[in-house]
Image (tube, rainbow, N blue to C red):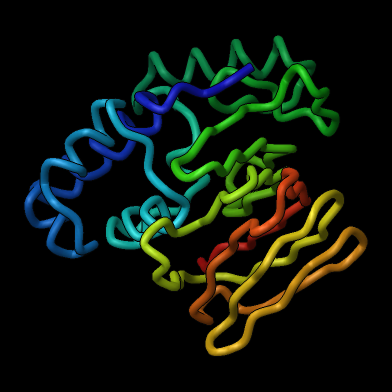
Length: 210
């Protein structure tokens, strides 16, 4: 089951408007054109990994906060949450999915980003700011199509399962092969790219800063 890009864009727009940030102001902050931000918000364009982190950082929210739709605030929303919790056997639910300990392959939320990167959310604990993901970089896929290094709060832990993935941290690059793992502070300028001919698939755990 997948999460449509327009839903992500809608959450970004709702958070931007809630904080009283104009589209042009957000565009200036992240170094993008207002037109591109508008296309992301309306689902006409997919953000890259670096763009998504830049937008969420500028808005002061986590990627988890905009990963899927959530009920609005208020009594009606609380009733919806109670009903969804009961359906999930006592476990809270978010974005229409149960937050139970086990998530089957057909229950994952999937986010297809720009430049050949796909995120599959493997689990979520309500209230936490943690990205627990199966990440696939298609051949030629990259987290930053412009080649710029990105940085954001938190820490990252990755384990490569298939293919090869080049990770650049500051002035050094590392070639990950199946079985290799990596961990670093996300504030370190970094980027990912698949220079091979087969998909690079790994399990990533990103604990975002509070």
